[in-house]
Amino acid sequence: LFMNQPERVVPFFDGIPDAVRERGSAISRFVNARMEEFLADRKPLILTFGPYRVLAYNLALFTHIAKRLSIEHKQAIALFDIQGQNVKFSFRSCEGQSPSALDLATILGGGGHVQAAGAGSTLDAFLKMMR
Image 1 (cartoon, rainbow, N blue to C red):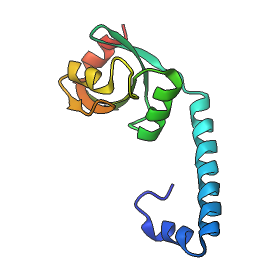
Image 2: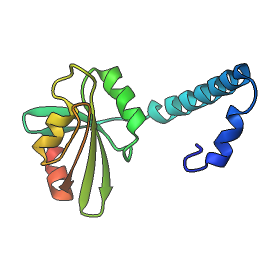
Image 3: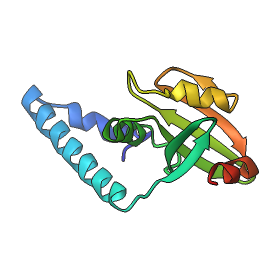
Image 4: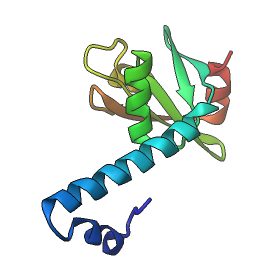
């Protein structure tokens, strides 16, 4: 909403703490409502990564949404962004989920952290994952 616009964010933090909490709560409710609208009609693809079948959403690397989806579905989530003949993946998982985000990224030669990792592939390889 205010990405890279600090001058628009600072006024939310002016004033007494109660006003900050109230404004922060309003922003949170707005963001949550928008996220619900956005997710309402999203349907995942099922992609195969090595021995794992993973729900994948074309959300162009929306990290916070991925984390929520991982919690909701109780499994690692793959986000993908098709850029010409290449596909970027962002994986998110929660503690204790198997495979983890890192497990999935490693299969594609990527890396990262256990709960947040990334990798890339060709568009052809991506299309084969959907079979």
